[in-house]
Amino acid sequence: MSKAFDYIADIFLPNRCPCCGSFIRWDGLVCEECRKGLALCENSAEIPPEGCSAAVSVFVYDGCAKQGIYSLKDGCGKGFAVCGAELLAERLNGSGAELVTCVPMARRKRAERGYNQAELIASELAKRLGLECDPRILTRRPTSLEQHDLSAADRNEFAKTLYGVSKKHRDIAGMKLILVDDVHTTGATLAACAQKLLSLGASEVLAATLCRAVKKEKK
Ligand SMILES: [Zn+2]
Image 1 (cartoon, rainbow, N blue to C red):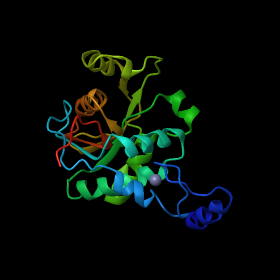
Image 2 (cartoon, rainbow, N blue to C red):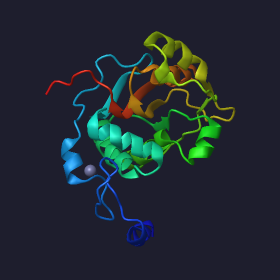
Image 3 (cartoon, rainbow, N blue to C red):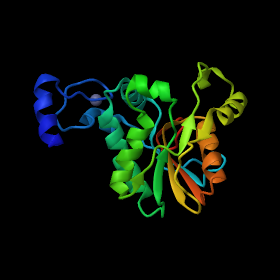
């Protein structure tokens, strides 16, 4: 049903590569050139964010991947989320996680944008791992302040004040969770959300992101 829809939609709105904008097959995710150009994060982060037992990412946050994230935020990068979720699932297969959740977006912002990109990645990942995705465990309060305007130390403090727990969240006591976000930069957001999940009794939190900002990835 949705495949047939994608095929027909492609006639009116041709499918484009989320990283470079070139036309691709109706069911393509990322063009061949960009797929080759995407640098992979081979290892988990050496020091995972506080509260996370490990932090797994698939792409280095640079070049093609940066463009893919911009497209994702613009609402036309689903192919990038799916392609990254496939690779994330390969890495997280056998992790023993029981539930997938994601970094929340402030309610109003989500309504304006129509979706939360972290939730999109989380649901694609959960599908591939055969797990349930519950994006409604945590909440985020609205703010006009942008995290990237802050120093690393200020980011940590600021992030701690941003996230809360949904009033009607499910019981996650004793559960091992995968926490999804689009990009892992300083890890302040992942740490703040992981602490909240641990405070609800989660036994372990594994961070999973499409991209990680790295100074220099050894080849
Ligand atoms: Zn491309």
